[in-house]
Image (cartoon, rainbow, N blue to C red):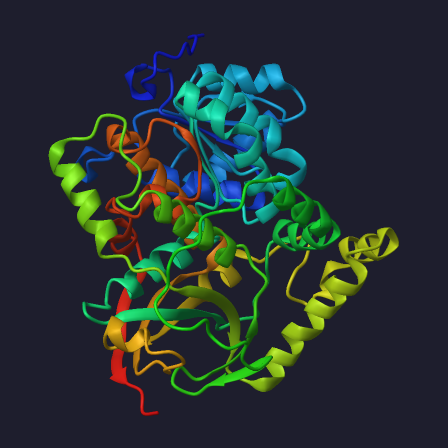
Length: 461
């Protein structure tokens, strides 16, 4: 077993495995394995992925996962490694054998900290699919300095939470060609399916635990230095209606308390302090020029996320589920009820069994970005002037939890493996500030996730 002694250059090590998928036998983990196998030993796709291993508590389940993910082909001879998040030595052993851990073990609030700690201590890079703000901010507070020192790049939210929101906002922002400037961008998420929509129980569990631990997040934020705020042209947007009818995109919508807006704000804050982004470990001059040009084209805006439905009844159903989680999630017995009977309290949207393969294949998402701004920055500076320009863009792709999330995670991993010198040495960061100037958007477009300009128009006052 190789040691992982840091010399300030994570990419300089030659490890036994290019990456290890931790929690590979879970609901999402098995789809991550399936997606990873598409790029294993495929020289024609220029994939850097030559050797991977699966890790978890139960070798039998991992073996079954590999068989399922390989079907109808015979499973490749991937090593199965035993590791447990309650056993730090097993996690350090994983880190000694690879340069990159893909963590699919949730809820991250309960199980993620030891994995990040092991990576930060050993200089191993780390990506996960977390959508839990308290976990992400706590990892930044606890491990950023250590990760920066050892050369461990720790990036959470490398799935549907929150890469479509991050790259989608940047895509909309870059359509505002000077002198035009954006003021606010609202994202509207629409989940669609020819069958019923069924979500991952772990996602539901994370939402319940998020309500239960909301005070801890506020306490953490009060203990941390205030983040830099970007300067956004024009007045702050009005609060707006609770239930909105967005006729241009055909959706009723209500505010979604997701991780996306929090993650986006973290990226914009870092960008405010580092106007040209974060320098890479050993960037080429061409990459420096590309990075600086990319970030100079990204204009900050107020950002929010709403969940949409084609019918008002669908929105009322979403509100009802939110009320259930909000009321019961803050008390012990209420949480027990929510987690014991997820299908009842989510009105059929979540179950412990998760969706069938047919339900996964039939589902898709659209994420509309409706940007309002000004035709010139001078107009934005004129007191309470209302926006006169609207730009609508859209990100669209397959089912969010089991198809889109693995696609994003694996493409992020491939970038990290093949372009490590162009990325920061180490630290704990949101995905946008790391992958924004790379070719992640192009890679996602090649793998079934599209980015489209829908309209550009003048708003009559």
